[in-house]
Length: 178
Image (cartoon, rainbow, N blue to C red):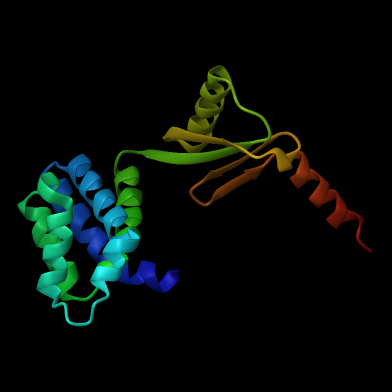
């Protein structure tokens, strides 16, 4: 994973800097998300792995599948990535690009897993509390996991807050070990 990120980072940074200079962060975000999804499609992956395909043919295939959803600059980016035989990096490129974009916009996406469904009011309170703690705008993605027994687990970037009953029991078991 670290190697993929190392290889993908220069492409993501170049895409981000270009998008920022053109004030097209949202458009590039959509294009890279689309390219990540298309490049991971099973049928497309099989086609891209054909040894007889040139880099230009692989780029053409991706551009054709994406249709008119890619502008000329995005198409050139696809060609550059394909020339360097890095099409498999599109998911990592999109992920790193989104991190750069979030940093620029002073926002962060938080994954909240709870034992039970959170109401809209609870999600709003949690988002406000996290915004105050992190100093950024927080977008919540809530999911449920009954194995937590109770409480929540929050993941926002490198920060992990485990307030679940399962987590507390694991801490207690660790503390009681001789």
